[in-house]
Figure (cartoon, rainbow, N blue to C red):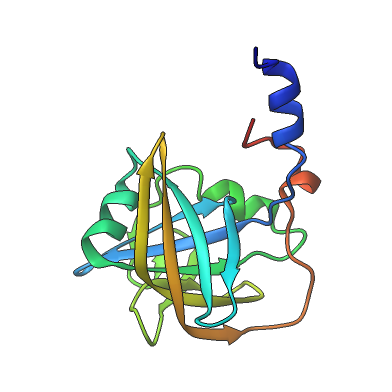
Length: 160
């Protein structure tokens, strides 16, 4: 029998960085805080991005086949928290947070982050309450040096 508390405790020990996942479908763009992300292959360069199946962004990724991940810097907890809720787009901003369209995908990339990767979805596994999107990295850029924001340093839990 599965010990629910042990499962929750151990799954929460898997380290996660925090990202803003930018998505688009046509002219519509959106962004959300993502944490279930990891590199999956060197050649070709692949990343795994797990997205809540009933979300608007999930539908946008399925329709467009692209996403971008902006890597948050240690200390950017407030920015991560902003993207837990819907943000109104005003020109090239999500409210007060400036973005620019990725050169390869057109997905929004947050300027005030460490950098980004842009991905074409090459596969998806739809099982459970999140879909595992596998994206081939087709673009990347560095905005500045720094350490990534880790879920464990925020005091938040997303897992278990």
